[in-house]
Amino acid sequence: MGRLTALVAGAAIAAALLVPSVGPAAPGDPPCAADKTLAVTFSASEAGAEVPLVATHEVQLLADWPGDVRNPSLSVPAGVRVLGRAPRKLRLVVPARASLPVTASWEQATDPADPDADPSDPATRCVATRTVQVPVQSPLPSRPFYDLPAGEAAWSTFAVVPDQRRGDPSPLEVLVRVSTAARFPSAGTRARRMPVAMRPSERVHYRKRIPHEDLLTFPKLCRFYYLTCGPSRLYTEVSALPERGPGRITKRDLTGGELLSRPEPFRKVAPYGVKIRAFTYTLPGHEPRALGYDIQVRQSGRLVGRVRRAARCSSKPNRYDVKVFRCKVVRRKNG
Image 1 (cartoon, helix red, strand yellow):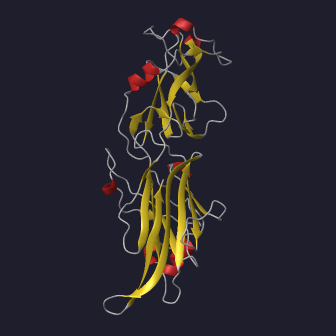
Image 2 (cartoon, rainbow, N blue to C red):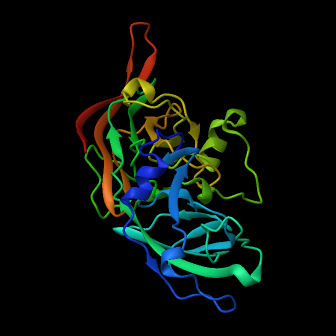
Image 3 (tube, one colour):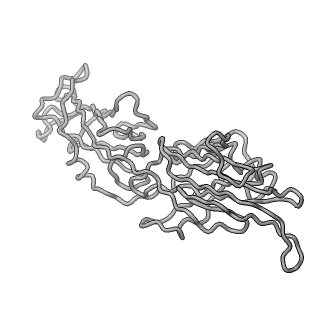
């Protein structure tokens, strides 16, 4: 989700943890006495900022002890998506549950308060295991921004943006239905679909590279990038919004962006949201008489953004007696 503002300090996260339980000792060294076992606390970070755990976010979890430990290891229940691990760290996707149990195992001195204790000496070493319940917050659904500046020949431009601190970074799905009549397409109309990844770990490095959009002619843009093209004369482009600063999001912030590829949708990720632009482009003699479309954006099983338009089109001479193709919207609905 990009550069996030720190919400809590590590001590605050640790204080929010439930009382840890002492688990069974590992084979080999004797188990540590309960009153001599070091406490373990956890802090989480995302994009370099310290954060609480928010479901569906990709975070790094770090364990910390108030004394010297050896051979630490961390584990989480089966089914939690782990992206990477180190002795004191786990990189994972936070599951959607009330809390995440994290189990830490380590070796320590039998009496950490003894100044002569040496955790490397097997004679004065013990093993400990503790499971800590780290609280998990629910994510907020992404938010739509309608009626952005559309540009020449465009019917509509809108954006779907996650909350900068607790937004849902689950993949988006963009669906487009098109009608050749001046009405909204029915739910039974076949939809063109495009998934959009938002987490950095979901980016795919495809074997076959496609040209940059700035180097392509219009037909090749249709082939490599646009979600809809062809006989309907409706063209839909989906762009990943650029990084923005912290603070309140306004429409003026939602400019620019990089086109996402329809055949290779995970070449780029969109952690800051997407912008969708629908427009018409025709050659003389191929103008549609009418057109309608329904663009939906879904995430985590819910509808988070929707734009519908219906229009009648015609070519009429302007004041210079040059025929100009225009479409007049006769019905519109957002959301």
